[in-house]
Length: 107
Image (tube, rainbow, N blue to C red; front, side, top):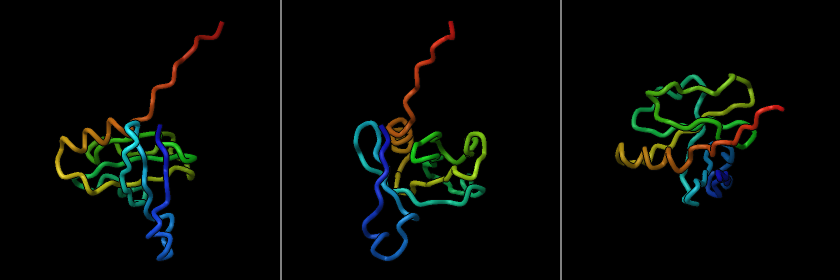
């Protein structure tokens, strides 16, 4: 269950799409900043999420293959810069990781 909320402060200063809160499976909220698609790997010690149509489709650290699956224009990258340790980043990644969908075989 990931959910996105606008930052009221960002909206008040005219930057509503720049900062967003994402809620994880634990219902904790994490503040993310929108990043340029090509710059996701540039943020050291961050958690990066790829979002398409309001859904988190990828989450990880910058050293991983930061990209939007099937690169499309409707995919956006956001970075969380407030994690203070590698352990905290791993916890946040696990909390925000998209739930696996069950697959059914065609009959």
